[in-house]
Image (cartoon, rainbow, N blue to C red; front, side):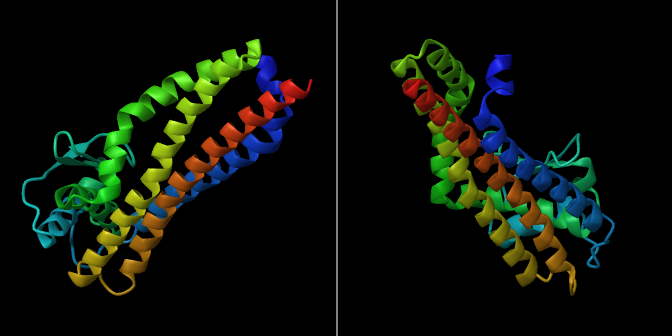
Length: 232
């Protein structure tokens, strides 16, 4: 395995630049969240209260809101029908906390309203998990043995995982749009604060775009490496 990473030119030419972009996106979301975590929400809402307000605005009343440990570990769990907000969001009265909590509530609303792309993503999750776990094994064995069938199986499995990431993008962007629209229409953030919430959610969305870019770069790298073996 080490030779594959250290001496594969496509690793440095394709994958490393994509990984650097992903790193920048992660740094940006952390910095943006910290910045707007220091800006109090003038309406006095905590993250938990903001999430509840978004749910109520869309007529959703059966979703629980809980605290979860960690930093930026906020998520909506459709199996338990629970919004879990991190320590820095749940009881925090900041523009960042309100924005993140509203976004997670947006996911709950998507499920409640039967939003199409989130149904597709939910159906793909089991296949994506299998693909992400087994694809690299098949690809590497296919490269080492120069076996087109094994390599092809690996590429298909990896492609399924990439498809799941692709479907995630409209889901995430839509949840943010729902969150911002509800915060604005409900006057839940003061003047100028809405732009701060938009920046937080935009930075978070870019991490999903960057993750997809890394996966596409990885897939392209494997295809080029296999093609190089064929020419040799």
